[in-house]
Amino acid sequence: MTAQTARAPRSARRLKTDVTRCPEQIRAAQQLRYRVFSEEYGSDLGAETPGIDADAFDAACDHLVVTDTETGEMVATTRVLHQSRTRRVGGFYSAGEFDLTALEQLPGTVAELGRTCVHPDYRNGATISLLWAAVAEYLVAHGVDYLIGCASISMSDGGLKAWRIARHLQEQYLADDAFRVTPLRELPHLTHTSASDRPVDVPALIRAYMRLGARVCGEPCWDPDFRCADLLVLLEVNRLADRYSRHFLRRAS
Image (cartoon, rainbow, N blue to C red; front, side):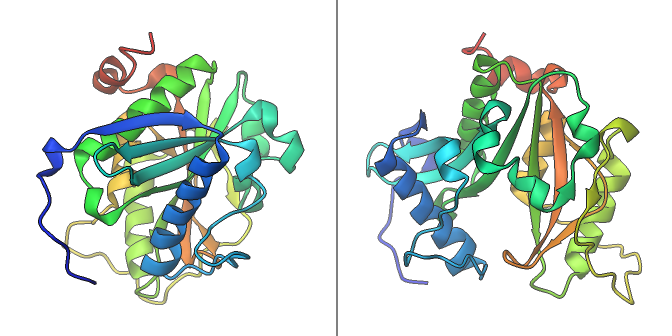
């Protein structure tokens, strides 16, 4: 990691959020995604353009971004695929990892969150809160009833950490039967997955999902391209955790 000059405290930075389909901003988001997923986590993105993480879903999605107004740098991004735009890309991205038959029966509108990442220098509560505020406003503005997404867990240690986190989330946050899905590629089981007294270190973005009221929809899926375990999570927008709905939805409502 290269040395960096001293910067102002995180709280002093001026961050702004945008919902965009602007090609220039999408390209900046794709560059940030490549930096995080490929360079930092070693995912095999099969990038056609060096330094860019792009796929067919990008053109159908709305992209939510957080930018540092002092530097102009994009520091966080996620994308939302609304149900009304799934035909042009053949369905939700997560349908390539899970059998979503149960979710297709849900009354109401579904949207999918994906490719969420935060610049390593900005991984703090303030940045994640801003990103989630933008997501919450989007859900209300577009009449979304259910938000789904793949929550990824690194398999860099061979899978033990992923299994511990997956089991912890299933024990604490398992969705009702009506929301259960089946992975298309089961996560390889380990010979030794004995219980440990060590605390389970759940990734910050997944913790944010759970604090909002999201639930895990079943067993994890093995994602060989991103070299991670994916859990499908679902958030019922009308059951958004009270303290967060008051905070995030104030402006939207």
